[in-house]
Image 1 (cartoon, helix red, strand yellow):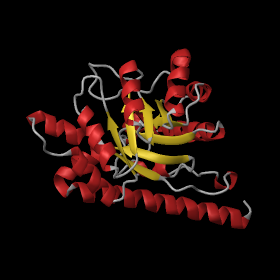
Image 2 (cartoon, rainbow, N blue to C red; image 1 turned 180 degrees about the horizontal axis):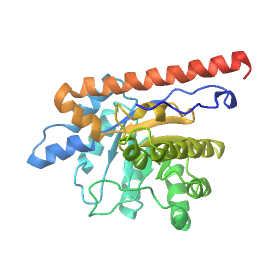
Image 3 (tube, one colour; image 1 turned 60 degrees about the vertical axis):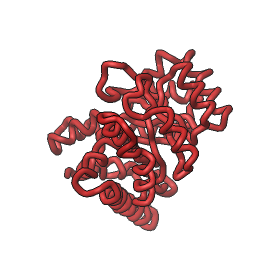
Image 4 (tube, rainbow, N blue to C red; image 1 turned 120 degrees about the vertical axis):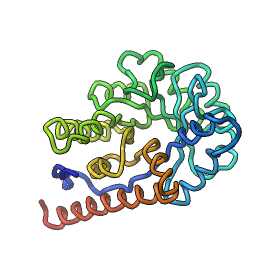
Length: 274
């Protein structure tokens, strides 16, 4: 994989740990292809946590194409890890979130015809809608993140509507990474670096996700302002060959190694005074 651009570690007090959230949507996709109860998303969540995941992400879509209401109920009842409920900005989803009260809600754009989420939420054009929506979730004690493209206007708007966090859409970066160390890859990585810093300076917790895999995750982990990654489809796919536990554990190890290297570089920078 390509090398990571030098981080300005001297500009941050310390490097925070990074959390791993595992998206279990496509365990449910496989179950729904045949009907019945197997494979069980709750069991997948347990295995993921045992292998090093810090939280579980599940997207309850309007059409219930994978995760279903009963999956959310079972995940909440089992309390195996904090639940991050991905959801569209609709009255139905707001009512569900306020009833089940997950640890966090990540607001995402949603279209029936899309295969998966295709881009970030346009917060700029929805400030009047999102401000009361976010407020109701936060009043219920739910942390609110917004899934957005790494764009300065979207970050500023996310702060204005009162979000706790942003999740930077890494899909374009991951697409560029497939071509190797190209100008496009470097440009997309620089966007993530710059907008992660902008988000942190605005007082937002910074997360990232979409399309991350073993080969492209290290540069993202090496952005010190990012404190959580949410990864699903790739790790579920790898689980077919090696098992979910090993799939998640390998990602956890890659992330921990990259974060340790970043922390070491930060320590050296502070000791040397550079």
